[in-house]
Image: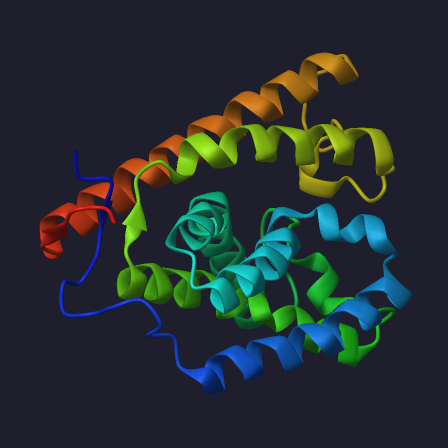
Length: 214
């Protein structure tokens, strides 16, 4: 059975060393800065978790781990990029509310600058998976981890923090019990991961030759 797609001319060990050290250096700056300003619970955001787990995947050159992070954040990060871009065009009035903090003068410019990693991360992960290969089992491995992160965010974050949107927002017109809203978020997240998997799998199957798993 073919378990992943990869460029057949590429072998393991093909991530440039400069990228590994640059990635590591950025994370070593971001982690203490984010911890100081937001607290450790902020790393439960899927994008932040993907940044950290992606670093591990880069150093291990693990197609499975990198595929998992691509599945977890590709579509949400593209929405973030679109919202942020529209906010720039509107002079600080982004839609959806997901990038409002990027235009909040109360947050230090340095902290907001670090958050620009959102603009690069999905494309970097896609390139890494393109280079090393896509593991089609990634979404199966990621789903229980993602559910655990969502439950942890529900238990540890406040409604004001609303990490991964696990708390019901007043912006929604529909009233809903907190537990039921969490189930909705779990379901929508799972659907998003499955859809992302289908799209990435289709793309890799169409535009890359296949290779048997080692």
